[in-house]
Length: 219
Image (cartoon, rainbow, N blue to C red; front, top):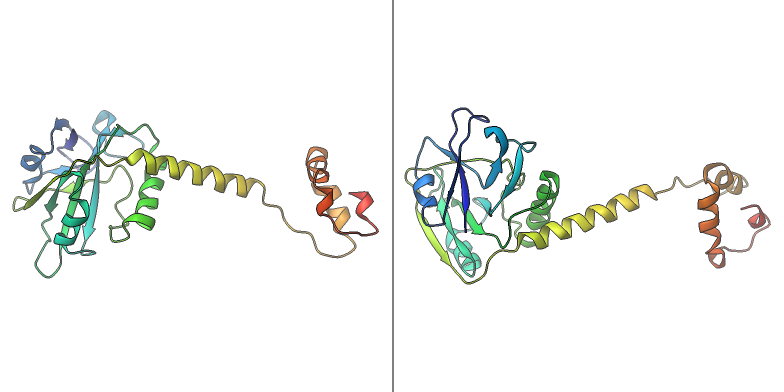
């Protein structure tokens, strides 16, 4: 139920942290001279390296979906929708700010990958440039708000856990990817020279998968 707003003295440095509820965030957004972010940063630096955690999530929509459709989609959650300075009747530009169930406990890289997964699978209309936790947003003195008063709280940690599992699977696949030898008489020699004994023994556990050949015994 808290969001952290940042007041810049410069573009990336000199920020201050302020905690407020979803109602009072409106007062912080309604300014042409203020930027805000969902993140908590050390030493007032709005960078991925200084990012520590956050208590809400911000989705940026840059003309990808009519604002009324977004309201219907996210109305089951607790949060709000705020129009940006470039919003118009012809091109709807706004941000969806949602409370999250638990404070994040991941790295900036894991957060970014979770956002990438959300954008690729759940909400493809989101601005894909706005996925890292150090993303900051400009305020808007003419912002219009739509209250999201649903009973659900967005569970960001589900997406973070999914992204972690995908990262582990991709690393395993990368680590176990083998350069395939030429399918000729040098094949057995290639395996013998490139695989260590523990790898050879692991492969031989599955010897039933090998076809018959005159050189199988040399593996």
